[in-house]
Amino acid sequence: MIERKRVAILISGRGSNMKALVGASKNPIYPAEIALVLSNRVSAAGLAFAEATGIQTSVIDHKKYGTRESFDTAIDARLREAKIELVALAGFMRIMTAGFVDAWRDRMINIHPSLLPSYKGLHTHERALADGVKIHGCTSHFVRHDVDAGPIIAQAAVPVLEGDTPETLSARVLLAEHQLYPHALRLVASGRARVENERVVIADSREATAPLINPPLR
Ligand code: DQB
Ligand code: GRF
Image (tube, rainbow, N blue to C red; front, side, top):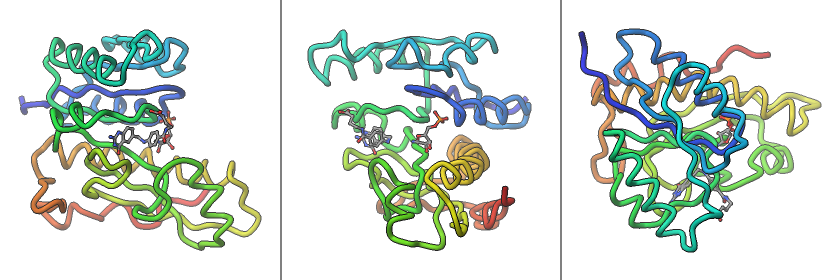
């Protein structure tokens, strides 16, 4: 049996990237097991899926905490209690404090719906369409205090097609996210993606991009 890292997935809503990670982790040779799904919103659709799958879940409602620090401290305590080794943000919509980010430095990753460093922040698909870019995509990166600015682990490119709306484009990017994020978590959990001088070095460079250029169109 291989050693699997204990991973917590943090969500706020739909949870489709969480489902993709759970799906990947069903392979016994995948180097991560999903030990906890934590949401800041009790109504997050992804929670019901995780529960039905038999994964431990927690709700930590930011509205019940007076400060960002106390909210993040509650999350940190839950992660430690569950013996979590890696954190994967997946549509988690609360900005983390510097203290939390530092506590999980190089052990917390995110998936973002653009080719970073373009289109940090929200409404990435609208902004890409407004700019007329022809290639868009998604990025998995380590989390730093500076939002959407951490070291890049992996990226996938997606074409922008004539007539695209934010909805059609986001759906195409989301399919790429579901391929990319399990790949990025595999690299990190297996120790093949390491941060050196604030850049990610992939131990076996054939692993870096192999399945990720031009994911199938839909
Ligand atoms: C996100 C990036 C941005 C937002 C949410 C998620 C955002 O701007 N939300 C509206 C404000 C919410 C609030 O007031 O808290 N992507 N924390 C740190 N660094 C990151 C990335 C995400 C979530 C938390 C980061 C993060 O790169 N410090 C996920
Ligand atoms: C995804 O587009 C992800 O890149 C972004 O938020 C969205 C979450 O979708 N951070 P889901 O909850 O994983 O379905």
